Image 1 (cartoon, protein in one colour):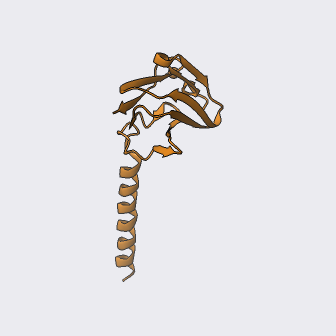
Image 2: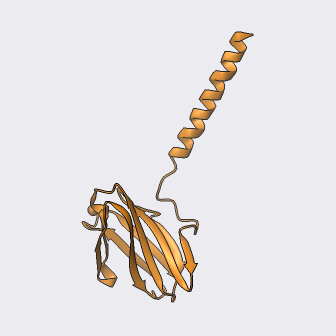
Image 3: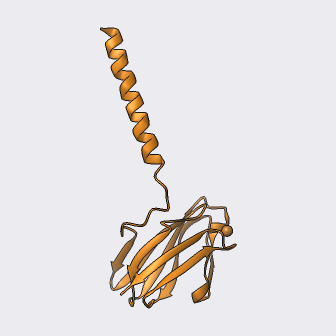
Length: 129
Ligand SMILES: [Cu+2]
């Protein structure tokens, strides 16, 4: 009886561990599902996080509406703490932890490319009409 209980326990632990591993192996560069874009009082707010790169790496948003890029850091000491959007002439240093709002104006239909300070971590915002 005891050995059956033990093997049940063991399989629960094994299955749980496998589920945990499956969950944690989801790549951070999957396309966004729209949950990082909100519209508040006619302003579009796009939230991305910066730490060892940007997440989500690709965001789909609306064009032709006043837009804020809200970048959050949490113990970010790598070079993703410096955000650049070259096509808009934006170069912004972020605090190690906190949120920083960057005004993107009202973007036209376009794909906006952003990078870290040194240009090794990319992110994209696809503004659609
Ligand atoms: Cu970099």
